[in-house]
Amino acid sequence: MVNTLKNIFNFYKEGFLSMNVGKKLWIIIGIKLFIMFAILKVFFFQDFLSSKFNNDKDKSEYIIEQITNLN
Image (cartoon, rainbow, N blue to C red; front, top):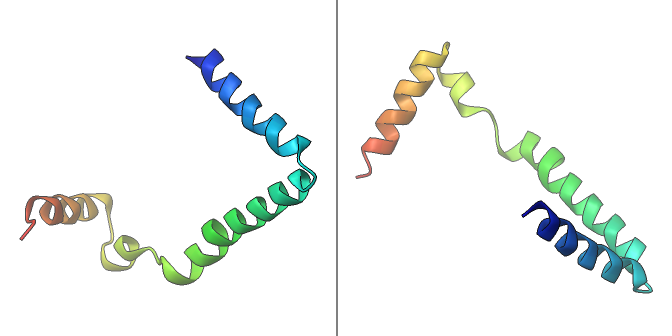
């Protein structure tokens, strides 16, 4: 299983690196991932549970209630 994942990774890695724009493409992908996960998370995905509840027990009860009441 691990060997198969390494082979798949190496296949794509060698493919991108042999392209003329391979390194630039990886840089663009890295920048886009950084923007999506670091910057957008801060502005659009606030920590809803921490702002509404004080402890983990209340948070978990709220989540269970929301999952079980799928109306």
